[in-house]
Length: 399
Image (cartoon, rainbow, N blue to C red; front, side):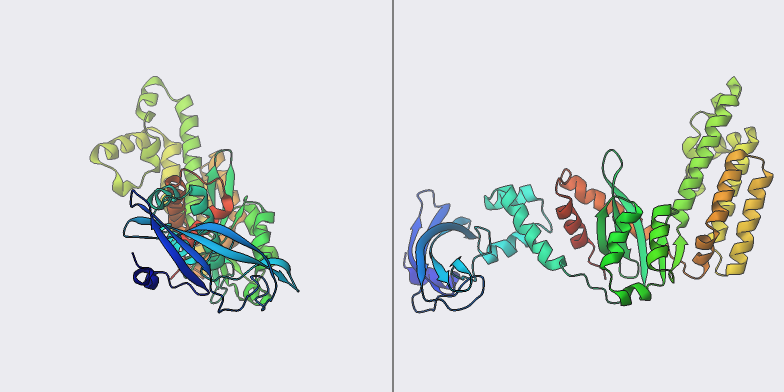
């Protein structure tokens, strides 16, 4: 086959095609490339012209497949003696740095990794999975190396579990755009401090509100770095904590119940926690029997609906009055767990009332957490946490 026919497919600067060898199975082709002496020698590091050649070397690199045929480039290159950098490789723009693939193949791999797993891409291109992962990781690093801080006014903060044994990542999202800005290992104050340390001073002063749960470490970090920002506690997390209170009350009442009472309470856990709209007719009847049987469970169940009304207020005064009324009812119930929860709400009243001014929550981040778990399961887990964080940022670029 004439090289004139294939030359348009391999328009690499500063090299010439010497030969093409197609292997017997016709699934592999090797092109031999040699430097084009018409071009001046350029140092790969400083990009300056060099006159002295140190040595000649040969390396084999992968290129994009053509018509189902794997392409290998047998590339003859030169090492240079640069006055500024010492002995360095000559510059060739078509070769990906530190990788035995061409730049266009590296870009193709990065594009495939958006939709396919590393293993699938490696099998498709006949490459080692470690090579594919490293190529994708480098591409993601270049893409997300610099964070765009433009337009950031409201943040949402939450954590996601990455491994068993209480291994977490703290996730910070731009609430308005849905873009994941930062992720860091752990969920301590020191973890979140690392995020605020990289924020420019002007961005810190521009943050108006932060949505989060009632986790003391996050509260302290935001208060230290953004004292002007209003902390807003998320209804989802408060109801989630309150559901734990209902479940503990159910445990206590079950132990105290008679044999007939235990028969009614058996299987009632999810009836008490489930949204009433989603209950079937049989479940409604069972729930009614549970609430009629036990006064404490009935009180706790009714107060849960009253709790949500606090977050539905768009007036700070009304929200404050509703919060005080709810806590008063909890105190009057004489149920120890409800009274303890009421005191906790009063300690965090500022973040609950702030919801009237900034009706925000971490719902978008909770939805993102589900997708992050899918990304993790799709890869059967990530041993490289840095790579996992980059894949999450890629999945949530924001509007």
